[in-house]
Amino acid sequence: MVKRVTFYDIAFVGHYTKDTIVSASGTRIVDGGACNYGANVAARMGLRAAVVTRLAEEDFYVVEDLRRLGVGVFATVTPESTCLRLVYPTSDVDQRTLHVTSTAGPFTPAEVQEVQARAFLIGASMRDEVGLDVIKGLVVKDALLAADIQSFLRVNHDGVLVAEAWPQKEQVLAHLDVLKTDAVEAELLTGESDIWVAAQMIADLGPGEVVLTHRDGLLVYADGQFHQAGWFPRKLVGRSGRGDTTISAYMARRLAAPPAEATVWAAAVASLKMEAEGPFRREIGEVEELIWREYSRADE
Image (cartoon, rainbow, N blue to C red; front, side, top):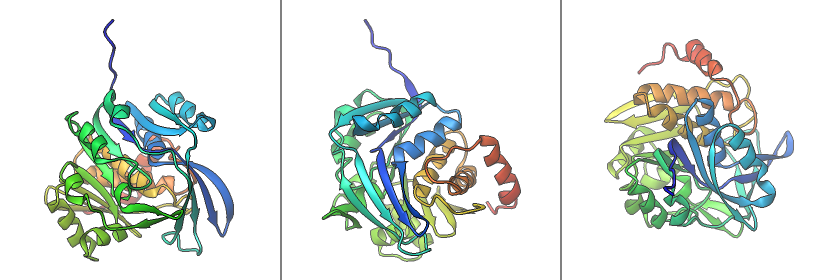
């Protein structure tokens, strides 16, 4: 019997994370992980989305939720899920400390081997979850390959995630088509505090497109041109997952639209996501309405 292979529009590779969020408004547990945030965006956009993830059997309700959305889930059962504790010590939502209480362990090339998609987005919580062997396994699929820089800069030091220099920087970046970073990570990677200059420097290392989030919005450098869009949440409740949602929305839109359009789309989706904790669960019509209301005069 010939095995039937499903081809997806976009596939997300990364751990589901069980996030304990601690802030002035209290302590709560939220289902996170870049793959979870990303698949929710892509599925609601009507794309064929897949998730390659690792998690404990007790958290498989997340897998079932994604499957009900039409997402193809390739899940490896592990003794524990990756559990993070995100502490926001002040009202500044860009200042936080991330603690690791357990991890689902590294991916293997075999876990991505059977998945076929037009684009893959790597969104790991920390270094060594997705190694160079897995990346090379994705490269041979001849698909667009994107990654969040946190997948490689974050290191688990005695239960705390900290950003460190990245020895395999040149090897990995040479394989990427799109890299997502934030302003702090971009400076660590390049030594340049000017985000415009840093984006160009990162592109010179390999990725043709750089998606950079910062306090006020989104900056994209693609094909030698800059595009930008601001955040417009009516209330700021769900800061956690902003970057994951942004790059997922950008890549999902980028499959059929130019960088300028994908930039505005990603900023709008992330703005709506920030109005609530957890993944994006809004109607696509709300994204279109926000773009009409706030981005119609955007300078492309």
